[in-house]
Length: 510
Image 1 (cartoon, rainbow, N blue to C red):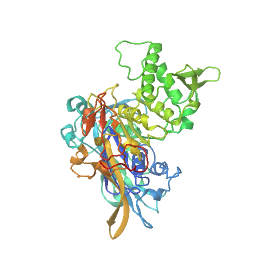
Image 2 (image 1 turned 120 degrees about the vertical axis):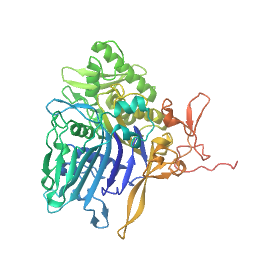
Image 3 (image 1 turned 90 degrees about the horizontal axis):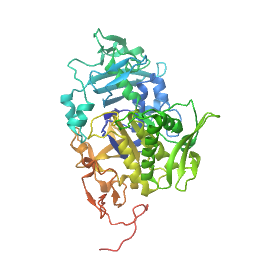
Image 4 (image 1 turned 180 degrees about the vertical axis):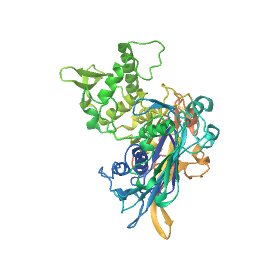
């Protein structure tokens, strides 16, 4: 779980310092830096898994092509920054396995990771690892770093575990060509640190750890590898799957049918809260019932969902049953319904933890169905009022949007606004992204004193919107009233009865 991210020198992100909760919605106009923040997260994730050059090439440009490596560095006119830095504070899983199947248990689960990368045209690939550090944050200091509202006894103590009195797990010593990166052993038996000459490293030290001798570093690596950017493509969601296809949802939505079929055929699907041991058929029925209940929040057009297994051709096809009993394959579903279904299946797969970044979740969805989408996204994320467990995994959701209809329904505590601002540095003017929170929210009280905005300044229209999660009152209490049915509503300031029109409507003076 990513709780804080600092970025400097990456694209238009200069001195950016952002805090995240379980669910965060980032809003702003096109081209101001929303996607660049996602790219920074994706780059960190890739650095935990790939060589520097491959990690850089994995970041796509605005047209979906592999980026020119130089373009990842901040640019002012024709000049590029010589280095970038990315720093993440994160809560990692306590247990996992290494590449050989050996169990690893982190000494402490709250960590800070810093990496600095320089551009060196004289080096092969052009990138050089300048600094790498992995340090710990003890439970006693957690309250100074985990600022979003949560239950301390129930959630924090189950998420933040362990203690360390020693130094960093990864550290960098020396300058220039003599820089040494030290990997400190924290497994059973201890041992002397491993010393690595930084100048010749083709990848981060963290990405090289594959054994249980460094369990805490390994779990940091696993956490960062789980950070995913979801760009759900309807064409990928509609495709049937081969019976041997991967059983996890790909970034573009591929393998939805295989994932659902795998969950349905488990003896006990992840997240089944029943106490009795069920047969596979009973567990499958429960899963499909839960999935149908979720779909019914989005639309009443369907009466069931299933996966057709064609044994002769070895194909798995997603099937939805209409209200009239007619079966429809995924090919006939709308784009919005497909995206919602994919996220609903992801919510059921409790064995897939990590961070999910989703761009424009409102795409293809009618405004009246946005509350169901918002509710689903927030329920994918960990519930900070309950202990972390299989039924409440350490998952996190970050979305970006420029939809006023969607923003109007997001609680203030979950909103970040980004805008392009002019900055002066070393005599040069340039534009960079500035992230602001709403006043009187938990981010407003952070020690770094972030910039603030008002909800009136956001691109929104007056829209009494049902709060997406009435049970999480710590996010929904502010500025909410109830309608006649008892539903919590958010009221905006302006007198405009047409919430989804892109232009103001003349009203009679009161």
